[in-house]
Length: 148
Image 1 (cartoon, rainbow, N blue to C red):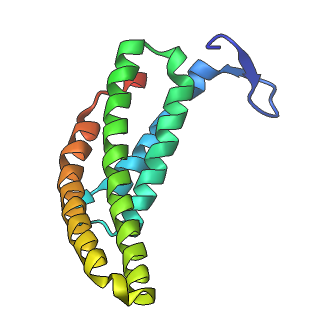
Image 2 (image 1 turned 30 degrees about the vertical axis):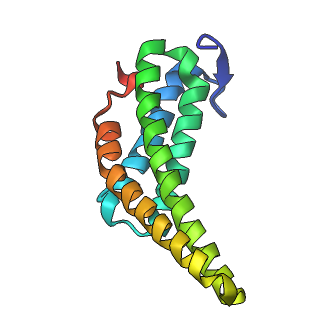
């Protein structure tokens, strides 16, 4: 795969995937780093945007992993996965609260159990928020396997 050549454009010059991969990964990494600044202060919408950008980075890195040493890729991907899990938990708690509040409006008879669920879910949300910063710091400090 790393030796395969592809036409670059009108000039007909050929380039390899191994040549282009670092540029693509750098672009996606910068986008994630920019969107994740001050992660604990981001709105739910901006955290979701960060999550989508991180997913793209992870998918591309996974696709290109054969070009790089497995150990370095695995270490980096572990940090991506950890942050994605925390962002996912965060998003899940927000969606669950929205759904529970809607249910409470349409089924007032369920108010006591929904209130208990919302309290429990709020604790989960706070835990997810607290876990974001450490996971973010680990990803931010992780060596970029495509530069090793």
